[in-house]
Length: 330
Image 1 (tube, rainbow, N blue to C red):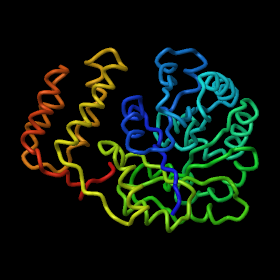
Image 2: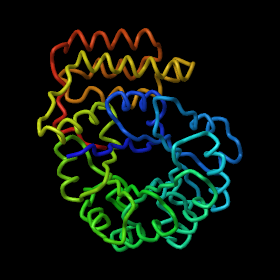
Image 3: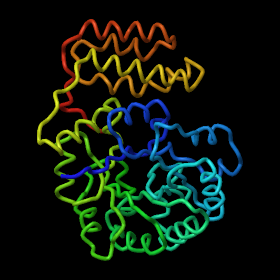
Image 4: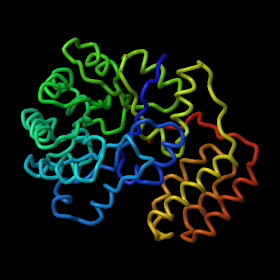
């Protein structure tokens, strides 16, 4: 098997600089910024602009935009292009109520002519390649993804990432890769198809790949607290062997590295620590007698204290390996 590209999915409050840094270190091929509101970008909101800051290690990377208004998306795409990404991605998949409920993200799956028109206008507005990420459809009775993929290709979208759920499923139930496979097997579709949903380790990654024949795999929630999942998947696809799970002491070194990157980037240790909390918990699944250390890790806002607690975790579980069994993607 040749080099199958592995993508890190765009995730709000997750795929900021320090986490992208860790995923790239472990072999993520292509990455995205956190998704960016077109309206906030054209209003020049500084926090939104900062999300578009790109680094040498990032590449190739996309800036991902979402919005409900076609004119705003066109303007935002032009602003994003100036930031120098390798491509621009349109979010047609975010299921969250505050976005989909306002007609952006997966909300556009309720208005396919508008969705396709938005893609067409953004493609026309920029010189960079434009890609898109979407879902199977709005709900169980409405899954237009096979025809939609053709339409997006026809207006110039150059690759399509598909999450194997409907908007109404949010992140519940199982991702349906059979419909992703149908898109890939459609002879009219020539653009790369990137499969996404429920990849929680190397075995699942290989199963989904063989079933669907996609051109690339995209890993989202399965990478939180496990940035080396890219290395694990790559190794398994190439050799058929599973790498041993990392030792807790090795995990601690990685958490420290991510935290240090966060602090350097944020320039505010407290803010960086707060942002890291969702990662802290995911890094140490299934450790016995971990409750007290976990509570302390989630309560302290002091950089030195966090490092001290991490040292305690390394000392207590030093040679033990992290156990990923029963680790859900929720």
